[in-house]
Length: 376
Image 1: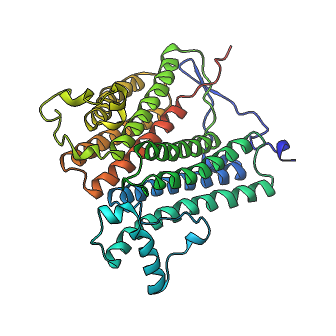
Image 2: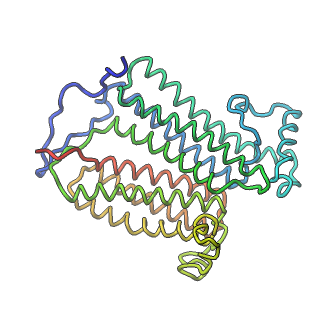
Image 3: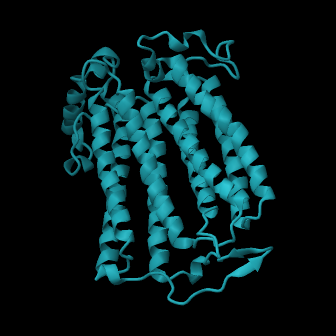
């Protein structure tokens, strides 16, 4: 039975004592059982594919290509139009959409192909991830290489992937009626689910290649672990607010830094009634919220880095903290440049991809700071 397969080594590994702290060394990749190594590599590959899909999705959004395919055909839609007749038929379907009639009514077939291919490859990448995840999963199950407790986690990731596909089409549908742009709520949900999939894959993969670190009780390291968790929540807040910035195209407004058109807090921040809609529909409020998260990260991450450098943590945790500091600096620089230049496609896509890089490094750091119950 699958539930009886144990991937962990059956013999205990000795712990080393450094400065009064007990460490269980992380197994190097060549010391991990073949099954664990294969599953971890597979999940890391899937995570990279999610990253690629995110970047292509960013370009698709920024080039206004997302509404070019007006049908959701998970199987048949894998093949693009072939021949002039099929291309013309696909274009004729697009001509019936509000986007064509209100925005792109002068577009010809060649221009349509330019936006079609971005949306097409975004969908193909999503479907490919599904296959790259499902087929190895079934193979590992058949070969009985998956530990029983790991099965529901992997099934959950697959369900999230299916939900993401459905949410993607639900998002596109919102732009095919009346207003030729997708709902910012559905766009943000689509983006958030992508990150949840990435987080789940990365965390499970890290669990497979790194054992928990065992140590004596230490309030400093415990505090770092708790702070790392809250920092991850703040980073996810940035992702959500970034989704709303993208959804209402708030990056096209207030293209100044560090002030917003000469104000710390723009006077238009609560101009919509009822007040709570400003957090989702008001460009000033949405962009201010996103900037606020960036400022918090800009101060908290360096402080976190200093605390980690002074604490008795592993060399890997210090490396992860330094990598996070560098990644955040690059991401903030990308964000400022994207804003000042009114969201050019290349910078906008790089900024969106950078958010996943920052979050991935933050996951790694949080994983390195995990601790088992204190030794007695």
